[in-house]
Image (cartoon, rainbow, N blue to C red; front, side):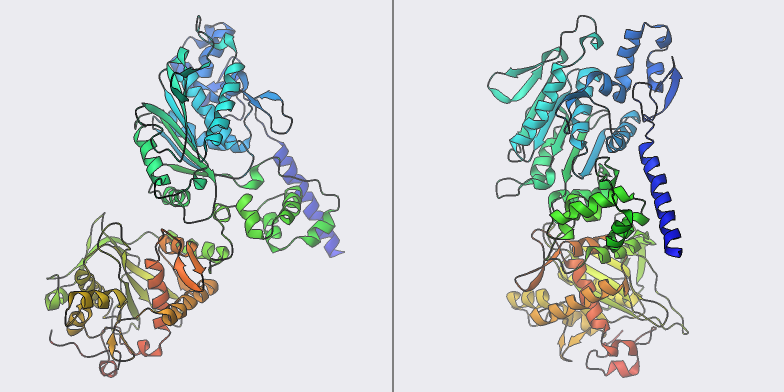
Length: 627
């Protein structure tokens, strides 16, 4: 009886959700539900910019009102001027924007109305018309708002670009002549002699260029105001061409001024590629582009009638029950439930029909970290650093570097501090500093110094500070010593492979770890004899295994989103753990080595205010010489 009542409540809630989805109060002719700031005028809601531009608007005849309105009201222009081919029926119909299209438009219009260049990166699910919206928006700019406003359509193949151009051609063939300015001829494409990929709309003095990702000079020599870069995740990288080069070339041709447009759009193609990197940059607010993602359940066609709600409810797995908790209807879940059977794995289904951006970039098989665990870890990466800057002493090396160690603020500093060291005789907080050694040049791997706060009876282990950059290796050694000293004389664990090889090539009798060790005795010794952590097949697998376990169990707190991104780009390949081609694992390794080293019980014998007497004689450490 109780179960029956509970399921009755579920059905009632489902009806409420369906009614809410069906109640789409949107009419681009009257302006109801349209984006932007609007005002009542002549029985319609029109953009305030219409009246600002035409104070005499209400006194104009209806045709002239329409002409004035389409200049400022894109949604009205779509329904009156833009013809598209309906994918379901194959018929030519006016463009009436669906919900996902309106969400994307709202982002673009907010930028345009604010007088900023329009810059967007769009992560798409299937079949909601994202590319259509972008192409129509650029056509509106060319046909109504500007003359001489050249555009570029660039797909991963020429066929993609040509498909978008056909969409534009359909628009031109059905454009309403009455809404053109008096004596303005009908807009149409004409070819430029000797340039098969360039079309001209002579009446608007503008060009429409088409190109592919295989040709990075598609925009060279042209004054481009708008660029639509399509399916960027599928752009191939080769010795001759890279997506980065093509995008840089195209964007370099687009002026940084109001109403210029650059849109990168794509369905996802896994992690570690150019599009994924650009998406992460935009989400981290390190890009000029605003990220837009539309989940599958916001797309109206993805529903399927439910014949037996009770049977569906019993068949739903944990993921599908979570969809219900997130607000999906049973009809949406039923569509997902049926569609999912077409795919070999759930990850493949999520990549095609993602509910979150993380699902869109889901990869299969080779990544040792699960998406759900990384998503949970990412939740802790929102804490802003207490300090961004650097660490300094009275000198840059030797014993001088140990004196007056202090932090300095600098907005462009490479050191981030999320927690300051806890001090005081009563405090028993232990820290460990782990260093992964990278290269010196900008194109090489980064060097990373990670400061760990070890777990205690009341708190998990956590990353509390991190330095990441390119630096000479002797300077890296001294800087890591300063951070270890600052964090209550913490043990200093430096990965030694690079430093040993470097010293051997130079024919030096000692290397930087030995010099640091003479000044700071708390340098890790492997096997009780050799300085530094040596990464080999055995120790790397043990360290990565410790990290996989910690991520799975949520047993440490991560603060840096880039660490999570590196884990998303990690793989097990031919029995070895490694970063995907073109990606880094320097931050990741400081986490893996740190977790492995912290499992050693000898670390907890350290007094937070300095090395204990017992530790001084430990095989890991020795008393530093001098002060």
